[in-house]
Length: 415
Image (tube, rainbow, N blue to C red; front, side, top):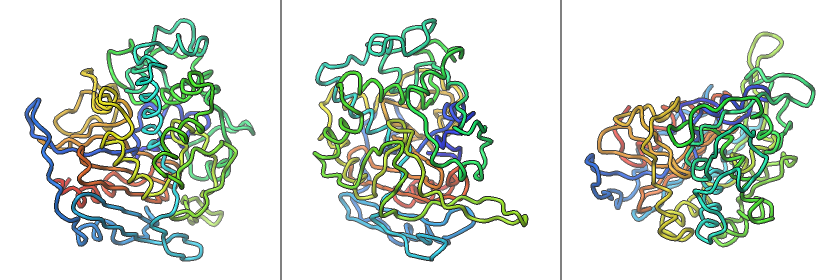
């Protein structure tokens, strides 16, 4: 889960460096297993969701840290939906349970799904290299990096160099800077070009470090292989077949967010020394295939259910979703929790999170400035959770707030 580090608000000068150490909320697929290696998955969520626990998990909003929450729990035992807080601190309007929000790294799961479909069609080889499919994109001195290594973050690629704002300013990581530059945007090619002069972090395949650069390259791969835009591919392959009518991969210049769950606001200093709230609902979705998509809780619920039930991938590619490489963790904060501390925790598009012996959580977390979101499900899809917060800090919603909701949905142990 996201432990509160901003993921890809992409600080214009140093954000690429932060990407490598941040773990986002994507589709956090949750499965409970026995603690022994090779044991069968235990399904424990056939009962109805606990509405009392779920309401309590999002009580007390709005607060100084989080202005709103949307929670959807679905599965074999029934469905529960709830909101908390305010949809707009300026007007006090209510939160929309089925509104849109910026899903951050949940986008990576869509991107991985598209590439796995292309692998099933023999249009891309997961063991083929970036140099093979995207010649000239990586610096010539870099060793071969495979498509699989991009998707499971074992590429060893650096996080890239500085990206400065169009006005030449440098992102200092503050909410005030982002509020003034929310519409600024860069391209995946610029991200790739920023690797020039940066040394590899480690030999490909020998360790794992979360790095958003991997998924900018993955998006470029989709476009090179298909000859079509990433948005067209994800729409035709996933969104339209599943009826995800409120999910999209907007252009970098499209700052609008129609019908939002809640306005995104960041706490910024006022001239009088106090703190005010800057509305950043309108912002560039330039993180693209890495983290720029927009969706709703019902759409993400449908996507995750389809993904886990094998509606989108053949068995061989489905297995990739849960294949975590047996390599050391290299500075992944979210991998350093529980009994698997020190080892890799990311698979192809998902993340393994082990809070205690005998419990494994699989998936991803995701943030954009003003939004922190998550999708959770048991591996058999008998219980699913979608949540979205609107935090006032660029660091995102606190880990404890996210975990409280997951604990209420899945009967997880307390922190």
